[in-house]
Length: 458
Image (cartoon, rainbow, N blue to C red; front, top):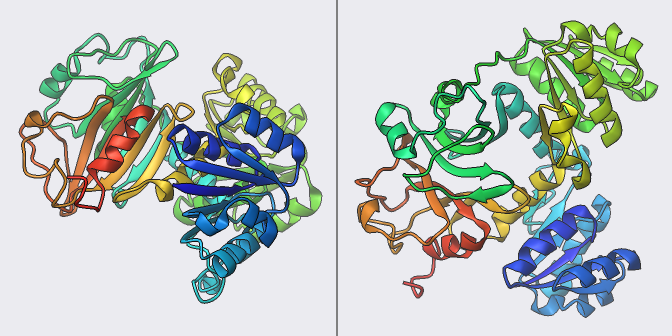
């Protein structure tokens, strides 16, 4: 597949890295020569220095033969115009744009991004996607990652196995026998810095991170089984009243009105705007690194601090200070990958990587076949994928024990007729079933083939 990426920043680099590793023909455009030099020196991609919305630059990148254009520059307007030029002059079939300004995405303007107006097939809003991720983490305390699939009926939770975890040192097959009515399947294990897709004889050990796919109604029981019975936060302090912080606060006010919210925002004008828009939250003007400000926000009585400023250092240090002052848990937004590897040693309970969230949102539209949703884990080492089974798929009609799945794939759950099915050896997948599975990076191409629309493959 020929793909053009406009923007060689962190998100553009991450997408280029994934797509080039999978053998796609990737061209990257950016106005900064240093970014193009860095990406072409480390990845098997071609680079063009120039403006991503200019016709001659797109032509040089091979837009006339491109299957897809992904515009992820820092500027919404450049992303939008790049998609328009790609459509009008080069007839590029699929166009994806990152849109940050929420005014473009307002419901009353939903017709803006249509083929007859601004021809963008998919818009990705990092602020909204990250905000939703934050809300999912708040809803399921104890989980280090939470993603929903199949109309929100299936949930993937990443759970750390604590020392007193009752399921450690037990073969996964026995867990199914011990808890037959628990609709949950361990699909991936991150242990000692390595990610693996387990089989039924493998065991979990203390310190492992388990990726569990389960029925939404069984999430809390699953967390408890792994030794996590943390209560949902009733008192929350949000550091940062920007787009993400406001989105999270507004959603909590709308759907969890009993939660007591306080927001710390360093920009006075923004603090006033947020205070006017929210009904019950208390908005304080100040820095999350100011101990007096944290105490003014009653951080010592808070169940959770959620740090969502644009500054990683403020998010990390402010959250560490909050726990020292008595806050029970922290959740931190971390942009720089260099910080993410040692957040745990600093006292960070959980962190969110906005780059990974954005890349996952884009990948689901890049994947071939009937792929409905994609979420990348452990820096792209694996993906959790929701795909729709077709009549022609080799998965359909046979008991799973008779199917030799390619290495690195484990099926976690099946969604059929609004019911969630935990798979076992006797389970038969039917056409139109939605299958949620865990796939190592090297096995993703096999997943695409298993769920491809074309009958020629089979």
